[in-house]
Length: 199
Image 1: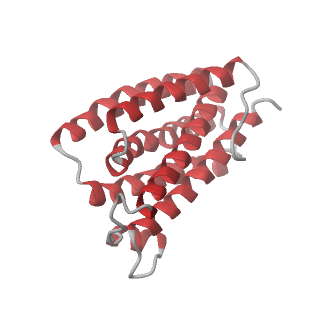
Image 2: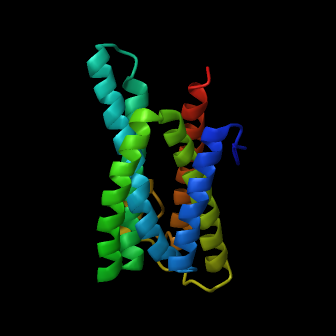
């Protein structure tokens, strides 16, 4: 599922919101992909946790089974995004302003996404699907910069080598490849979750 074409107003709103976020990221970070990854992965770690928590509470309220696989998928997604962040902190070394920006963006986005997920879960999953589409694009651009020699292909951080079971001599390029693959998986899962609301 490379790109999900918007088919209704919910999809169009999700796509527009994502494009707005992309514009701000492009304006603020431009081609500083490591620093962009730090901020964006902070945001990316929110939806899985919010959705997993709300789905867990829904199961408790309704006293029904069957929610377990979705809860585990969403929480695993949140943990995976957290590991992306931990990895890129080692690579980009965010400055004080970027660390402050992380706090502000996370506080705003957590509350915003929680409200969206409670009242419009289909739209929320579609937003995440589109976010992940943009993440795949960004990491592809990151790879191009590495391949063109514009960004040094440094040694992969040990945390990344351990998490993804990479070879000991793995490089930044190897890290970006596995992270991009993760994002593609999250893209497909969230678009599928959104589609399930149409059944």
